[in-house]
Length: 169
Length: 275
Image (tube, rainbow over all chains, first blue to last red; front, side, top):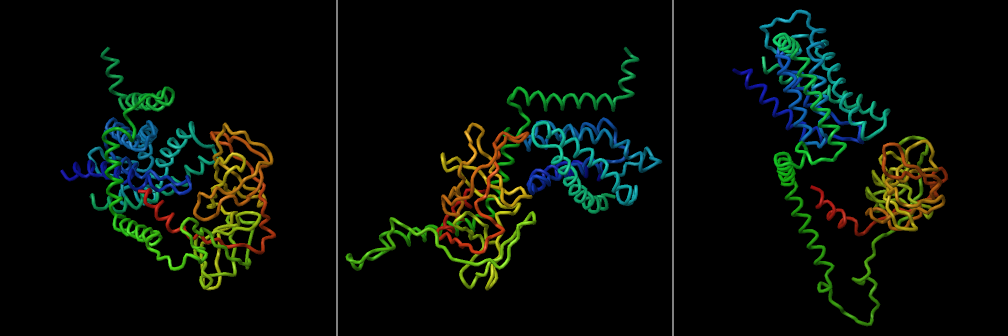
């Protein structure tokens, strides 16, 4: 029962944090962390694929609504969710179908968790900033935006895993 | 048919991905093309109200300070009000006329340190808090703007040079008063860039650039330099012009520190419109 309440709460919390805090971090146009995708990263390892895609798409669409970004957050979250099962398979070789726990520092291990986050955040941010590029800035600028923003996002996500991953078990 | 359904169900993950992806691409690119009114934006009932409530909530945090500033402005206005003065002698020349208020006061200073070779350059001056220098005062010379004071010690002050990545100076074209922003993009200390010039303007080589006077730091019409070249950068709709700076920062030895006597009033007022 506890697990059922944790995820809706996180869904709302991450959207609120993204809209009211992280969207206001825009130093010199380069740093624009998208920490809301933490929700997609922390979903149970064995969540049903279709549910994962729908949640990611819906969440992205809500962020889009608040940032006037058409549907680019929805698209990049969807893209990231699409690759999540494959990336998870790299880091945990044996997946117990009954296991409904989330990825955490203890489960795939600190290093695996870190790389799992790095790969998916990079997929998300690359899609996001490149989709934005169709209308706005230049390529080299965008590449640096992807790298810098990803770094900040990963930093916040690793902190979030330390807090929420532990208390949720 | 049953086989088809089985096939789709078996690969439902992939098919849902395709479906949602198509929807997202349609939402993004169809809207871009036709500029349709679209419900997924920050102006609809739900998002608009939420964002509005948020800004109302955060504005409460500054309410006490805003009240204080409002009261201060009121007191200041009452102090300058004509009726607050008693005219003692009508034969005396009144220099402090309420029709003319002294706005800028200048103080001479010598440079103790300067650089032009870094991306962010700073100027050190031999006047400090003891002489009345405060942060955010401007530095000008007869040839143009030199910088803005950022740090003050008792005897010295450090100013952010015009040759600094954070420097944004409000400037205008002398011939038609159109505004732009002067920034320094690095590399060449004799050249800066004037950005955000509307594309319909006719720009010629040799056009004079002066300060706009809209910032509370510098007076109006301080000579900055002349336009050398201009272009519309890829992905931008504004003209960016290369400006040859009249001031040679490598030879800079003396500057005037500008004190805007009315600055606090302007800043407080402007702060009130930013939520």
